Length: 289
Image (cartoon, rainbow, N blue to C red; front, side, top):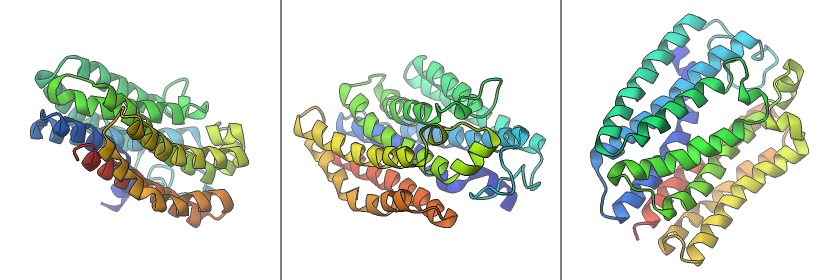
């Protein structure tokens, strides 16, 4: 199982959990929560994330960007643990599973879910694959915000009763900010090897100092926006409970701002993923208070 765990990157899968919790928490607050919708949405989100990791592993190996000098965790195809064919086959199986769940969610809500799911799959495949991979053109963080923020939170709320209230759109913004920060931390860690291999991530385009500022801005911005939305009454006042996660932001912000050490930056990325999950849990609970 080890090669598949390497390709799956389990720590990154947390990014797909928090948005579903927030959207489902909003549904519970409105009295329309459905366990089947929640379970299918959560499983589908994790499967799409998993498929994205598989596709990224195979695509990066094909383009030769996962070199021996890379700082981050090993990649399954680049290191020979798995073949590209094995990984692409697994990607197809996982996408098929997510598609079945998407069809079920559409059957209990609206065909709109089919469109969102199809767009998510295309975005997943186009991140580092296809003729014009947007992850190599400084657009990765934008798509993470759109699909792990807006689409994930609003979609997870929508599947319960086919509605998308304003509160879901607003709370999707801080959730998307924290998800995007995970990718920024990853790209700050890999900035030297990415620049050397021609992978123009947003961190490469901005440079290390500006990318570090962006990372901190996304994390702190998530908390500021959550507080503003609650204070103005645009979202539930109970959402302020998510601010209890703010102390967890200190370590990743400080590490990314100061460190050049690979293992420390990997730790910061993992800490940011935990922050994203805990923030989502607290937000999901808070909107129901």
